[in-house]
Length: 178
Image 1: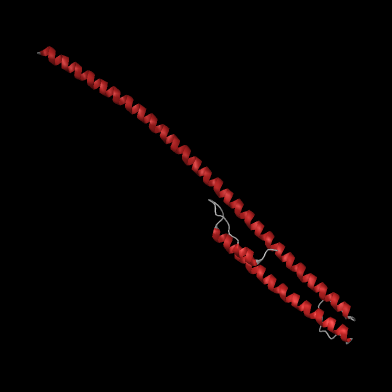
Image 2: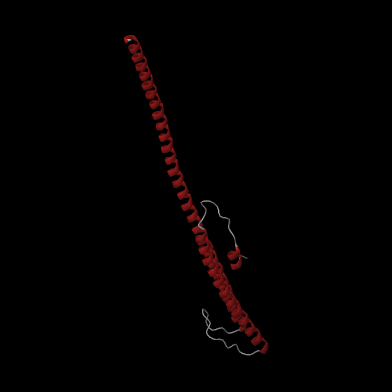
């Protein structure tokens, strides 16, 4: 059986883009609080059942009448065995209510975890899409800059060749004029 201390002492590994540790801790604190409350309530009910069973056994041994206060959910009880059956039924009912509450809390926790996981996966997909779009934009910019570099080099080469040709022509014209 899982105890409140098991929940308190449980350590989880943290992973990148995992659950928010504070949210998990807060939720587990709520689970522990409720589990402890149910355990205390169950212990109290068990003590009441034991006290009732003890009183019934004592009255059966003494053969005296059973003097009980009003019992919820029953009509007049004539025998001690009926009282004992009622106590057991009440005990079983409280145990079942505890199990039902436990199952509800566990199911609620599972739903919460499932919801958190779905939200985390959605955020991850959105972030990956944004990063992919940014990567594509950067790749386009790189290609644009490569094309710009290529064209710039061609223009620079043509300009330098023209300058050299002009220089060579002006050198020949200067030599011819002497």
